Amino acid sequence: MKNTNKVLIVTTVSGFVPQFEMSNVQILQNMGYEVHYAANYNMPSYGNDNHRLEGTGIIQHQIDFVRSPFQPKSIKIYKQLKKLMQTEHFSLVHCHTPMGGVMARFAARSTKTEPVIYTAHGFHFYTGAPIINWLCYYPVEKFLSHFTDEQICINKEDYERAKKYFHAKCIDYIPGVGINIDKIQKDVDNDLKKEELGLPKDKTIILSSGELIKRKNHETTIRAIAQLKQFSNDFHYVICGHGVLSEYLHELAEKLHISDSVTFLGYRKDMMEIFQVADLFLFPSYQEGLPMALLEAMAYGLPIVCSDIRGNSDLMGESTERLLNYCEGGIMIKKADDASAYSQAIYSLLQNKSLMKKMGVWNSIRAKEFSDKHVKAAMERIYRRLLT
Image (cartoon, rainbow, N blue to C red; front, side, top):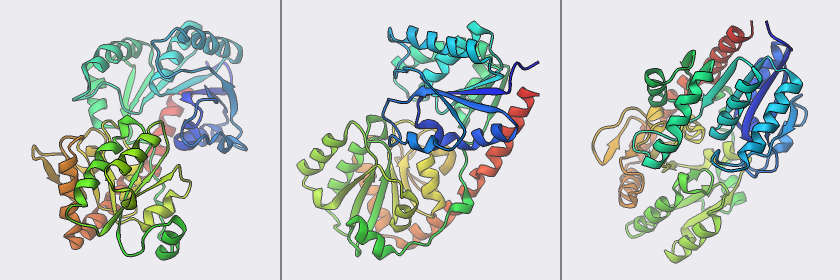
């Protein structure tokens, strides 16, 4: 029997819920539950968009999360979560992000708070991951799976591994957070938008989106653009996002003498409009769960050049052993740090605009398979099973 009509969502950084989890919040609120949110509201991420929590009805709790569980501050975080759970007597805990997932499950175990859901938005251990990731994260996740009532995985590789090796009571595959296909509109005046953004009107726009951090691998694509300029000048590269590598990447573009061909737009709230002025989406990440940026680009009918990794391949299709894997919707690069391969892939598409158009059409159709309507229905079934 449940104690209260309160549920707790836990993530490391506060920007996570307004960016990715509002659909789940609405499901729980519609079921009559008061949603509490424990996170670090002072840790920059996702554009510092805490204001988007205003008016949502979410009750916020500051937890002094750090990025890694292997730090002395973890004891303080554990105590904060334990006290919160003892005070509020939650009927369910849904945790996300590696740090949030670890600390919340330990605290829930200690306070006998249950059931507990953990959504893995991409395990840190994956095929091709550094051995240190396997040594540090895999044993922890396997151990904590004993204290997990519902394990949700958002890509097939993680799901198959969890089903085979972990011990959660239930393990489900749900394809990401879903995309609202109804909001995909092509209503922007391209020339006016390009003028607003300071982009050339007469060149092919190549777009990347993501935090300026090592995992997103913007350095490789900047080097690829430098190589591409030796063969073509009929393009302009746009990077949307902010992060710790911003200064380094700006300096790299200058060092490679391509500053005139690269525009850094920083964190943007108008990505749906920027997708519409782009002609090709470039996504070179080293690691992803199921990338929303890539899914959005597909929904807007952009051809794709991306790394051949878990998550990307869930959206784009299975890979081959070729260096350049031509898929229905684009090209996947076997080695994520191979700048020459990216350059070659981009050039081959720039020379074949009809193929780019065909790929874009396929992507717009494929994206509908990841509609938020399917995800919402699956999540509501899970919540109702655990809360009734």
